[in-house]
Length: 169
Ligand SMILES: CC(C)(COP(=O)(O)OP(=O)(O)OC[C@H]1O[C@@H](n2cnc3c(N)ncnc32)[C@H](O)[C@@H]1OP(=O)(O)O)[C@@H](O)C(=O)NCCC(=O)NCCS
Image (cartoon, rainbow, N blue to C red; front, side):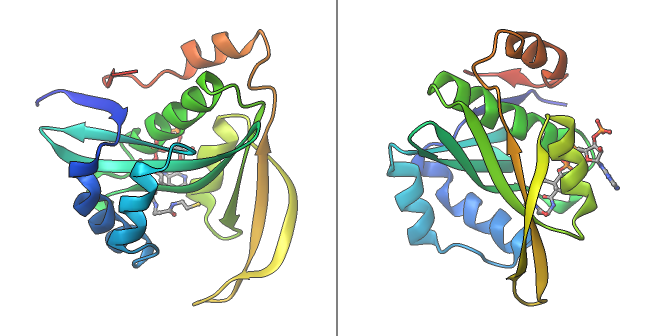
């Protein structure tokens, strides 16, 4: 198997971002929206790539000292192999590098797989938004991960570092 890399997303990957979005989220953002994201200095996109093939990616918007995670998605045949964990690790690592103090995200209350993933990285549920999602309608859980600049966070990154994936940042 060729090497898998965790890296920042560059413009040539935009069509693949959109393809993964279609596969995992039913087409949440358009191609133009992804082009804007990749060019936006307040956005960070990280991906796991193998031979120029994007296996999954995640994105956050930096708002002052907060990282608002907008997207985490792994192509369905590659789910359950630790790639989602690698992407969340990469997002939080980038948020730390950018001096963020905490990170937040929303997730469907039924998405137990994603919730387990976020809890693994120290996210805690601090609230819910009623009927936040549509098609199908569902409540959203609001998760926060604080302490991104605490001394102990370096140990967290070492402990949770993705195995078998080369980190390019
Ligand atoms: C959520 C998602 C990103 C997870 O990616 P993944 O590559 O499957 O995640 P991982 O293999 O790293 O697993 C992460 C954790 O999820 C949990 N998990 C994995 N498979 C699971 C399953 N079948 N059922 C319940 N929990 C599961 C485990 O806690 C696992 O951590 P562990 O292996 O250390 O115990 C992926 O399933 C996905 O793209 N789903 C569709 C899009 C989506 O829902 N995105 C989140 C929107 S907020």
